[in-house]
Image (cartoon, rainbow, N blue to C red; front, side):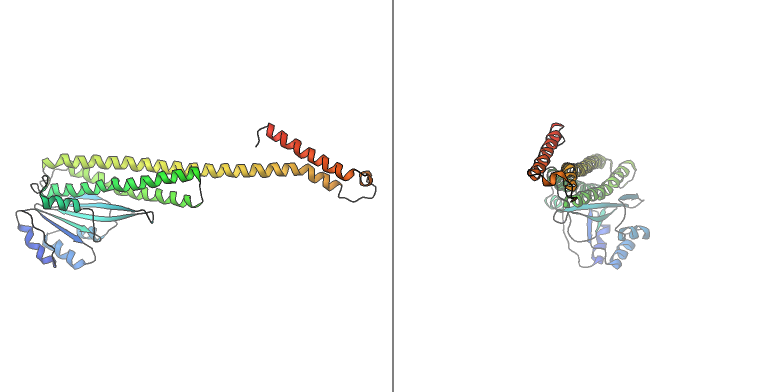
Length: 314
């Protein structure tokens, strides 16, 4: 059987602790400290664990006790418009016949699990809280792939922009992508340790039949880590390509300026000599002196350009 309740008070959830069926209690928001204290007291949760739930900067981890398991995971989403990675902490309390999830804010990615529970598809309604916990962790891990897919499209776009039309703003976008990938790595890497701990530890709250499913999620986290590392290498390579392009363009500009300056050095010398205005300068009285100077300067400029071209300096 399946029942869904949206409770107005935390006390209304307490009777479900003693029911033989599995209860999933999902709590949105951590600002009501008194509610969390009541849950901790009723479910006999250690005060330090309740502090970890309230501290949303926790590293993903798992702690196994005699009567419950405490898990911290990170749910991520990518805001493509602002180019930022949004990370939300989700804490799990897994007991003999209950799963309690604590979220920072309303809205999540667990609708597919809710639909499976409502429709009775698969073995989720025939299994215990350990399998429900696996299903929730599996959805979190699968959502990493969706986030990586969006980030991969952006990385490919950055690569194309750097090759075709690199602008100064692309550097900040590359750095932002690298920062998001680092944050994602910090969320996924400890989650792999969490799943490894659930697989290795012998607890009566985790059935042997659930271990293969946990290993499957573990393998998914390894794939996510590999993809993250690939994208990090790609962004580093894109930044190197951008810097190389900027350096190449600067070299081309400096080459042109150097050639122009080199051509004008002898021309400036000639103009400077005949600009001294001494009275006894033979060429000053020559009828063809002015056009001759222009001709000499033109020949020098053309000869230098020909020499530079022959040496493939431009």
